[in-house]
Length: 206
Image (cartoon, rainbow, N blue to C red; front, side, top):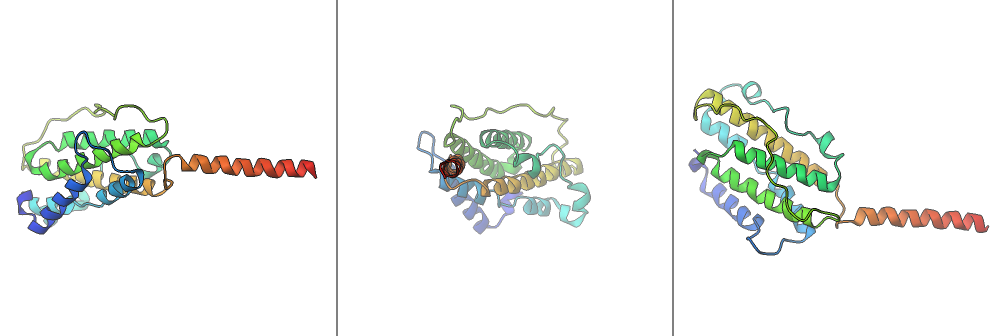
């Protein structure tokens, strides 16, 4: 199915994976590069190709490919502290990876693993970050797997991919609000506090 993707698309995706997946034991990219990589990775569209391959574009995608309610929305994500935010992102990625663990989604799974590698690296750049990356958790009770190729199978996978892509776009929006370097926002608040305290002292002195 995915084999029918154009050669140019496969080449571009492969290059992206080579760039975005850290080699085991190698140093992670710097903070700025990690932010850029995760945001760029979030723009990859797998839904259109899947729907086309499965003939879902000929039906009513707004009905059979609705977003799932168990993927966090932007309003929830943006209120999380940075460490908790990245941990939640990693857990969702593990969840999607488990749900799409089929040969049909081999390239998409590698793509998701590349994002998760960068999320782990990004987590380690933050102050007070945990020593280890998040481990997969069982947040959902898996339902019986429909027969591959059946309408139910297509519909469920379509919903998962659509929800994942909306989720990653929200992740990118949150990352766009992050400071240029880890801990900078805290330093800026500290500098503002010093200015205010200085002004207060000057008023008292006057």
